[in-house]
Length: 539
DNA sequence: TTGAGCTGTCATCGC
DNA sequence: TCGCGATGACAGCTC
Image (tube, rainbow, N blue to C red; front, side, top):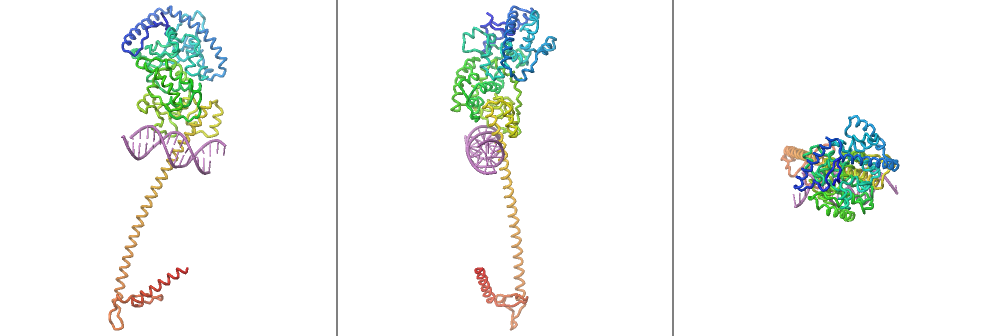
């Protein structure tokens, strides 16, 4: 029973290596060897019955894709320029000349469609070079699947809807399993297929992995997706959420943000489908992911009113549930979403993000955020998630007129506009807060300097006062000495020395010096002081 | 574990 | 009325 076609080769349906169980690894090795041997045989013979089936399938798909492409062209009359600029003729020529062996499936199908029928025989899907790093294999296989990805992307269809666009069963790897598991429509994870080359034709995992077969062989999708950037999943999830209609709180929870002040709350009834696929069965180790995902989906709805933060472990299950479609969208995002989000804003970011990561574990946080995302601020992640075509720097630092004209020039949803305005408000307030703190710090420093200067001045004045007092005392002493010296030399009428304790010297206005008894001096002094007081009282 | 410092954010006020 | 800056207050994070 041949149910899976992997690049022109067949796999026995009941035999799915890739489980995390170690016992399955041995079977996986055997499967790999068998498959490798089969590949060699097929290459040696150059053709096979299965290839004929594939070619027939390709021909049928080609017709379908061409028909679908014609329909899509009418549907997507306003496709972006990047799609209009996509030309494959030159690549086809390069491929025919042998200079370019990295043609994608779509290119090849177009090449086939442009060639006479008899020339198709020489090319089968098994001959398609699936080079490591050529992620276009997955992306450009839309024609093969009768899907116009550009339409899906341009319409911002979420993953779930994008998957539903597949009209036939070519995407299915296991029709039997599919019928037996009707609730597992698309996201059958690669955990069943350890060999990444045996995944879907359009999802060549080798494009993301180093071409070390022996290492890849023992990896499961669990392992392969484990280290992938969570932000990519965030983008995928939010892309569907942002366009399909969602509650901003849920996106905030998905981003680990308890507060989203975008202020718009859309329908959140079905937004968790693209995020949490309860039917995704990754492996035995993640067997409990189904319940977790359900609970997460449930809590996501709760989070809209209660503020639930999904734990990182649950987010990990979400990532694993993205399945192979992840790669296709990933490729699209690498190519079509050329957002220039600056990693470093002009405003110095805090070294510690206030972004509240669920669980608050920095190890887990750093595990899911790569270096780029660690440098992204929360608003940058938000903008990236909602595919806002402006950088945070542009949004924040752009003049008002330019900002308003920019908003009017682009067709933006209310959510995007709200987020942009929030980003601008927060960004400007952040700068204002920084300036305010800097200014406050400057004021404090200036006040401290003033205090220091005043203290120094006070000390100077104290020293000057001490010096003045010292000078005054010296002058007093000199005056006292001079006084006694003069009185000691004076004689009364009887020739006796004048007692300094009974007489005092008094200078008159005309410069003459009189010897006056101290009683008169003290009484006269009292009278003068009393007169002075009276005068002051009268005045 | 606790506290200080830093930073982002929100609310509010005034221009 | 709107936009924006300034600032107090609060919370989260780091050390």
